[in-house]
Length: 227
Image (cartoon, rainbow, N blue to C red):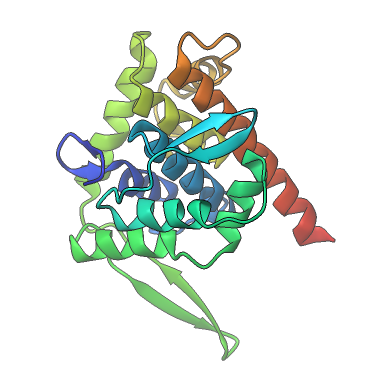
C-alpha cells in the first residue's frame, strides 16, 4: 500500500491535490507537476528499498512488487531499461512514457469523491478539463498541516521534506500559501529548508539528488517545448 498521511491521502494523492488550485485547475503547475510526481515516486521506491541511487544513476535492488500500481509501473520500466541513464534522464524518460501516473491519481481522487471532473470544449476539437474540489476542508487541513511544519522550525520527516521539494520545484508554494498572512515567512522558510546545503543523512542526500534532477528535467523540457 502507498504511504498514507494522517490516514486520509497517500503521498502521491496529496501532491496532485495540492497541484490544483481551489477551482480545480492545474494552471502553471500542470507541466511541472509531472516531473515532481515522478520524483516523488522514485523517492517512494527508494524508501521501500526497491532502488538506490549511486553516482547519479538508479539501480534496482529489489524487483518485488510494491503492491502499488503506480510504483510498480515505474519500477518495471527502470528494471527493463536497456540504456544507462542519469537521474535527470530517467525522470524525463518516465514522464514521456505513457504510464498514466497523474491520470491514475486523479482517478483515485475522483473515485474517493474528493475531486469532481468537468470538461470544457474549446475550438471544436480541443478540450480542457478541471477537477473541482468536492472536499475543500480536506485540502485546507492538508495545507495547514504542511504550514505548521514549515513554521515550527522542527526537523521535518523525510516525506514532509520531499513534499516541500516537489512543491517548490513545481510552482505550488504560492498557489497553496499565497493567501496566508505569514506567506512571506513561509516562502523564506521553504527556500531555506529545501536548500539542503549539507544533508544530514542518506535520505536527505537522496532528496537533494532528486530535487536537482527534477529541476534539470523541467528546464530541459521547457527548452524542448520552445525549440
